Image (cartoon, rainbow, N blue to C red):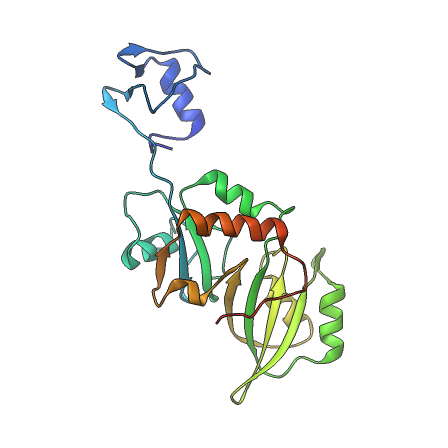
Length: 243
């Protein structure tokens, strides 16, 4: 949490005698330290945990949800720094959005929070708007609610709500647990072509919560509300999308 290295790497540093607590070398793994009262040093330099920060972001298309890309494509972390995120924080995304998808995503340096939000038992709802080449039919909606088999996985939606946006066919789709390219695979199963896909809600958070910004730091109260929605959401009863 102080940016020195992975847990395993830090254990190697401790065994090697490179860590001091209050000026005394500590080489015993599992030794307990109170960082609020004691001074921890690595190779003579004081180390302190990063402040925990979570951002709500509006990811554009053409950005990868990863911290680095060997092909040199833009990543969500690079984009976030340009959008105003603290460049000293080791951020990573909570979940994923496809390279060609856009919309709301969470970025954090709080690993425990990310694990809690991503855990399957919480089933935090995520709502999407899909622009397709034709409207979805009632039969297709019923099939998506029941679940379809694709490549050995069962893909299911909690709700599918057809819309009409101008001359284009759209629908809102709510997922409780997302799989790789979940919505695209479901729609393509019925021969629907996805022209655009945008995430418009994560739990209780919607586009309105960005307050006109591309990226905004969430308050502790907002993070607590997000965790509450993850635990208490009722499947298939969507609030207004707020998009």
